[in-house]
Length: 113
Image 1 (tube, rainbow, N blue to C red):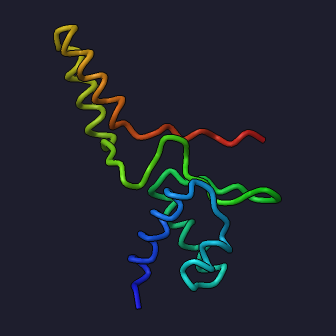
Image 2 (image 1 turned 180 degrees about the vertical axis):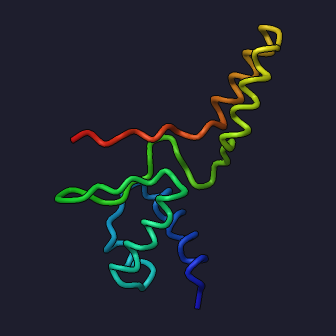
Image 3 (image 1 turned 90 degrees about the vertical axis):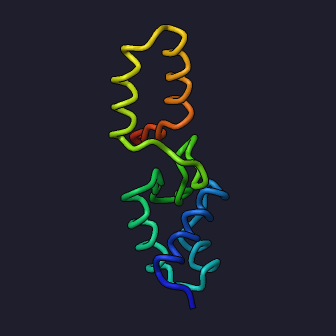
């Protein structure tokens, strides 16, 4: 039997791979209750760019541009690299910008009402 932590990691990859799922699909896939699936997603959404849309047509979505297998810079790493970039030669600034673009966390978009 897998632990809750292991299951949540698998759920994270499941959401990332499928891009949009429902709580019921997660519950069915991992053999847990609807409420356990909901709690797992709520916990994951605190640390990962996962969006929950309630109501008809809603579900759990991975934010555009985010994939669980991709590594991202921390906020501190991003800030330091941006600070250091200011002192670089123009050609090195372009390289630094490409690094920041490749590894920056996707920006979380607020849902439109």
